[in-house]
Image (cartoon, rainbow, N blue to C red; front, side, top):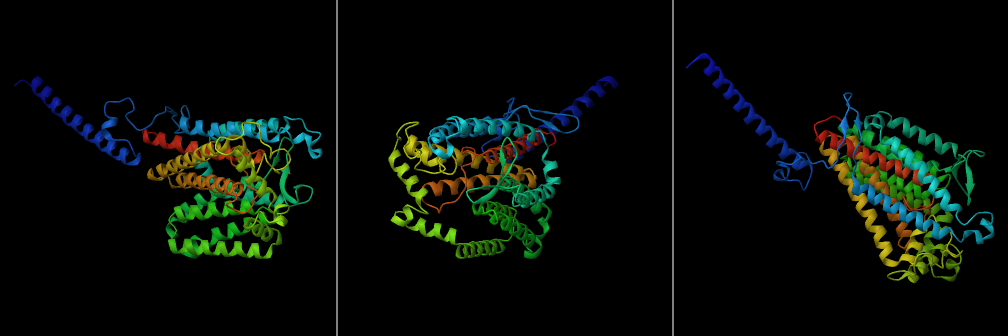
Length: 444
């Protein structure tokens, strides 16, 4: 055999070994990815342009920063659908308010135009947040939490905080009244995720793992109860406890924390006449004294659902919004939906929130499977926030829970709520984008 043919044969053997090694590597990667992304089989990836389980396309710059050119279209579509229904129902619930002497100077479209302005500002803010890598949020999680504490203190200072209905919860900013408690919910989700990453090696130690977070929640709770805003405190406490549990804190310690929280809540109710009165009215809302007092909103909300029936009275045909049901465009928007769109409309809203929260949880689980613990816990903390607040608002409207001043996320009128909701969802989308980047072999 000549030297030339021998060289060719050796080269062919080396090429065959490289090809076999590459085939084994591809098979291994397909197996790993199918375990990370449920529902994707290796066979489904073979010979497809979608070689990795990613529907959308984006590019990676040389610096490793992800530039978004695709997105989870189903997730965004559900969010936009909930917001669009919210815009329609806010207008329907507020269009008759100028007939009330309290709102006589307002135009019929006053609340609609302000709601649309809030959505516009929130959309711009969300698009900006979507460009920021999650590493930045993890690095400055503590600073964001301190900012929340500063804002919660500022709102209590006379001349800075604005009093509405005997509650000092807003800081006037011209274009909108900013509510620090809404920002505190997002700050707690980010801070709790970063805290658990730092304390990952101390999850079995109560003092090291739980006590500092408990003190942080206590400080936030005291500031919120000074406003007062017990509903926001319940949501923030739920976020922190949920992230601790998902972060792997010992189950016995978790139940100890839950018992302490329930005991604190019971003490607050026992020593707060206003909240104690609301609890008693909730237990018997149709008592004449309660129906014209603490349970007035609840009884008219139940009447609205009763009038709605299965398919509702028709869009714009609510009677309860005509000055019978207070705060119909904010806390009790679901009651107007029930009266005008019936059980079908209410179930549509519930299904929309259920799907959205479930998708956020799955994004968080996927991030944790990719060893991105902060991103995963933060996303799941945001899921707890949306699920908890939506559940409380719906429960209050349906008479399942005592009356609380919590709005329906993405739908109720309120500039601060819409702003922080969309920023939180932009962070979730950022988690998803970086997950997809890693699965395509890039860097987050």
